Amino acid sequence: MLGNQYFMARQFELAIPYLETALARHPADLRLMKKLTISYVATGRTEQALTGLRDLLRAAPDVYLEAQARDGNCPCPVLLARWKAKPPYPEKSSRYLTSIGILELFCGQEIWREHFRESSCTESNTQFSEILDNILGTERSS
Image (cartoon, rainbow, N blue to C red; front, top):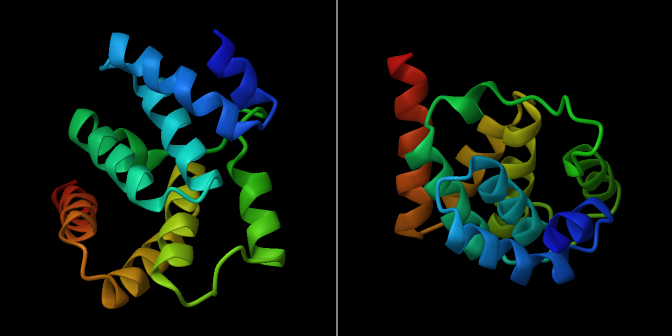
């Protein structure tokens, strides 16, 4: 699939329309959801990334709490390192904290919780609150 090739080449902007089309055809494909969410984060589409994360958690709430960046092709560790060295947004902004939190969640890094909590303090978005409640609610019930 061309979207996956663009994703693997870290050409996220080019990957997005292909991943969106593929996900429309296969709406239960968790890998497509994750790749599209990562692509949204990488291209600064935080609201769309939150929607993708919400959809992932609705489809498989426990899976992403135990996520690890085991796949050497996962771009999250590289994006995290780059963004922590040179943040694309102000470091205390909700956009930065949310984006970093999503990537850390996918990598299994424990600090994602802190970034999501910090972001929720500055974010009035009800969608974000729903996602945070879903993540923490799943965590508490496990």
